[in-house]
Image 1 (cartoon, rainbow, N blue to C red):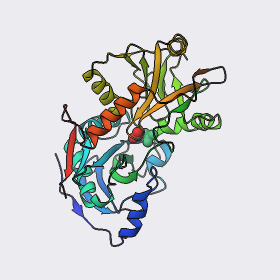
Image 2 (cartoon, rainbow, N blue to C red; image 1 turned 180 degrees about the horizontal axis):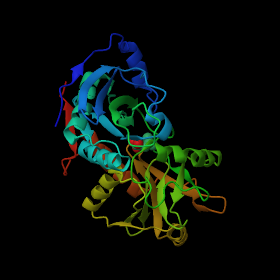
Image 3 (cartoon, rainbow, N blue to C red; image 1 turned 90 degrees about the vertical axis):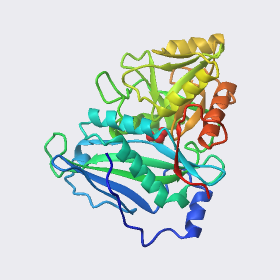
Length: 362
Ligand code: COI
């Protein structure tokens, strides 16, 4: 199912000079393109009024449910420019399906996969000039859905809006591919059994902000959460975690309360293609500690759409430091990162047919 999209072009798009200045040093999540997509939903009317319109502030009623009860979900995707000028995105069906799972958990409506993809495609078409060239920059795409019914009763909203905005993006961490240290949160959990941990909802990220502040105060880039029992690894504030063993096996936590990362799944698939063993299972903190001590765990990395793959040099806490904060990036992490980014930028073959073309070559 898809809809007709109405297009209203911005009367004040950024000048070529202003856009070039942004694209020269985009940072992450600070600059936005000239347009945005909105699609409304009501219980009675379903999805309607699909439109591409000038980017700008929303007029939102102060009693809108999202402002009070946080009924919101989002996705993170990227558009990549190839050497021939064409623009592609990566596994958008996976993001569409995950948004459906998140919507189900947050009692939001299901957006059909084709409509989700069409919304992304329309925005990239109209703001194509904002897709950076070269390097590892990309156009970060942020589809999201909010409950905007004007009602303070606590129940699923009957009026919802789906939107897509886009932001030229450089590296998520300012150091680029430099290994980072991670802070182990002992006091705070991210999610619990039966909670929203597997959904991509704003509340999960809100809950990670205080622990992330503590991580940063301790010289770390991100926080790592454990399970409710405080024994097993879950995920970082905004990305998944993978350990690499000396025999080449990749190990990642399997838990109902972590986000099913598209980047993680893809990296693990590419690793399997290259002959690595992959284990998805509960992973204890003790296993990490002992594995680093006896040399059987040689690398760790964080992965997500925004951060791609960032090596983890050390895990710090008030009690201990696992690993060496000054360790260089490991060879397995670097090779996998290159394999994935080469595929995304069209520099290497795409054996699984993951890339979807959005605009043509120049
Ligand atoms: C992403 O990786 O795209 C996310 O949504 C997480 C956030 C750290 C930006």
